[in-house]
Amino acid sequence: MPARTGKEFLQGLRDDRQIWVGGERVRDVAGHPAFAGAARSLAALFDLQHEAADVCLMADPETGESVSISHIIPRSRADLERRHACLERLAEWSVGLMGRSPDYLNVTLAGFAGRDDEWGAHGNEAGAANLVAFQKEAARRDLALTHTIVQPTIDKARGDVPAVGDEVALHKVDETAHGIVVRGARILATLAPFSHELFVYPGAPLLPGTDDYALAFSVPMATPGLRFLCRDSYSVAGNVFDHPLSSRFDEQDAFVIFDDVEVPRHRVFIDANLAVYNSVMLTGWMPNIMQQTSIRAQTKLEFAWGLATRMAEVINAATGTGAEMLGELWSYGEMTRAGVQAAEQGAYDWGRGVWFPDGRPFRALRGLLPLWFPRVNEIIRLLGSHNLLAAPTSGQLADPTLRPLIDRFLHGAKGVTAEDRARIFRLAWDFTGSALGSRGEQYERFYLASSGRAFTRAQSYASPDRARRLLDRFLKEELT
Ligand SMILES: Cc1cc2nc3c(=O)[nH]c(=O)nc-3n(C[C@H](O)[C@H](O)[C@H](O)COP(=O)(O)OP(=O)(O)OC[C@H]3O[C@@H](n4cnc5c(N)ncnc54)[C@H](O)[C@@H]3O)c2cc1C
Image 1 (cartoon, rainbow, N blue to C red):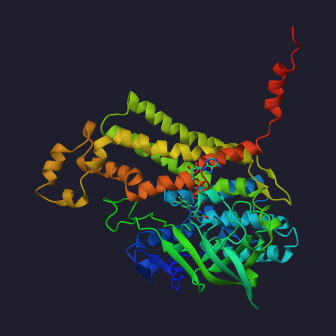
Image 2: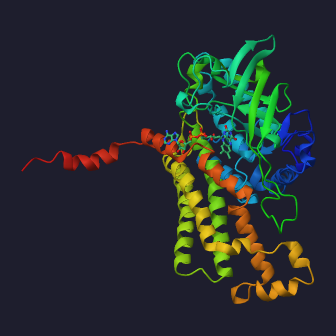
Image 3: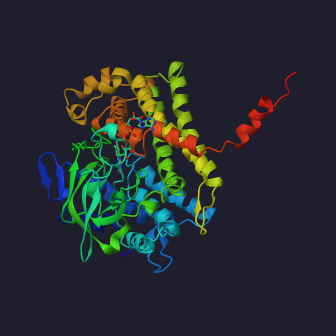
């Protein structure tokens, strides 16, 4: 099957998956009010790749069929540029609000398959071969994947990773004639209801002796024993005027329980192999995936700046303190753009002919973005003030007795109509203050670890050479 259409994507969601929202097990994801809006949006994203085929599709190197460029294993800077154009087009569609659109894991998987030698180390040749085959299958069947790589938090004092005997964290409990059996739980599978498969790969390095927790695999969403506990839906049914973002972009997040799940052998990529588990995430994973997620972040920041600027203009507040805050907001988007560009221009062969961006700008962005996004929301809320909550609905605007009054008393500055004013403030509130907006802030703070963890990691990877040379001049001066 070549790249899916939206219709084909939706058809792939009809199976026996155990998706729970509220107190209900959902039988028809695409038709359920909690999920229908986002399902339609994701279907449109699959259609978009055909509409923008010149930017989004490429010929599969072996079969010649059309597949998404997000599956490309980059082997040159030109490949990264090509991928950039596709990722940017996809990010623009949800203005960066769907952080885990399928291209996120397509890029991740392509990076892993490109360095299958790392996956095949320490006696894991069979796992690496399974991974390479799965990457090709994911591209050719155009699978939407969700993923979960973090152990649930039960007791912070126990540390980030499971100790020997931990019953909660995902671990292997048995072998069968066909594969392995896994049990436990993991957080937090974004996009789960809208995915075809669940991809499990390594998170934080594990402790010696906890080999049974060292797993990587992929299983279809309807695999027996898998249960997905979705958070409350922030999807709001209704027209796009009233809820321009919440009606479309709630990508969902789910806690995953593995109640003795059998993983077929050909889908096991790491089978209780601590050495591989603890090494495959240390090299190219970060610079590879950061290209996707930073392009998305840049898109969202540029949208936020445009939104804030238009909002300030509507009430003629884009000068003085307003201009200062707007300029601050613009700077975050611009620094993200510059970081992506620097990383891509500094791309090099990371081994075996696979090209990933320079990791340094991305390590800096990784720690900074979780701090910038909450500030962006703060700026929009400061600029918007009470106006964010005085924005009539489409129903109020449609009422013939109210409309003349709204037009008279709730228009904007410099001739901005009441309808346009309402439209912009409703959009700004949906972006920052609605349940979806609030979840978006939580996402930006944590989806790739907190800022604190990212800075700690940046410090451990930073090259001290030039800084030392600059410093040594003063430290080695003769005493006079
Ligand atoms: C909306 C959302 C969607 C997500 N989607 C996914 C997904 O699709 N797949 C997936 O696998 N995971 C997903 N996650 C989970 C995400 O991977 C984790 O939340 C993330 O790794 C952070 O881990 P944590 O929650 O344990 O928080 P921690 O990193 O432990 O942070 C909690 C607090 O402790 C502080 N802290 C902890 N350690 C340090 C340190 N070393 N230095 C400084 N400060 C520290 C932090 O600053 C923070 O205040 C998602 C999370 C959210 C919120």
